[in-house]
Amino acid sequence: MGPYQILEKRGVRVETNSEQAVRSLIALGVSADSIALLPGDARSTLNEATAVRDYLREKPGLDTLILVSSPAHMRRAELIFKYSLGDLPVPVTVGCSPSSYSGFNPDKWWRRKEDIQFVMSEYLKIYSFRLFEKRELKH
Image (cartoon, rainbow, N blue to C red; front, side):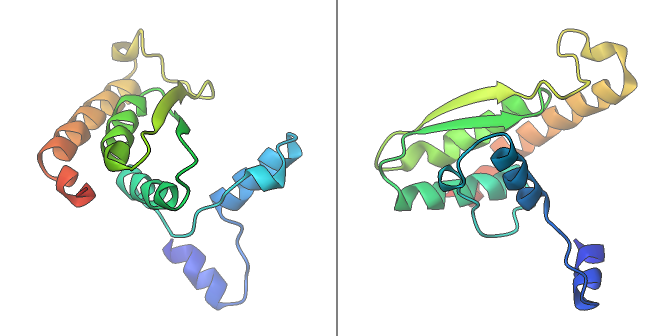
């Protein structure tokens, strides 16, 4: 974010990834009324889960979430979101859909150095979540 902030201080408006995603959804035919861009600057899956949890607390009629992430990250994202949303007054069903726009092959991840690193990193992050970060999502 540092370079973006420097550019903004100089008067340059930089479109965020979230704004690009909203623009793409609208171009694909999704109604702008159906899109909710949550405030904040989430820098991790944990931050995202917290923002979504806070949003859903204000919208008790919403009971389904479709979580889209990279195939290698999907397991941890699901774990974090399900834990985070577990105490809402209305149970939320979390459906997971690994993105098809990834070069990661979950059936042969051990064949590429990058995929091995990604899998090992995700396992370390899962352990970190279970041992430490879970506390940040206090219900």
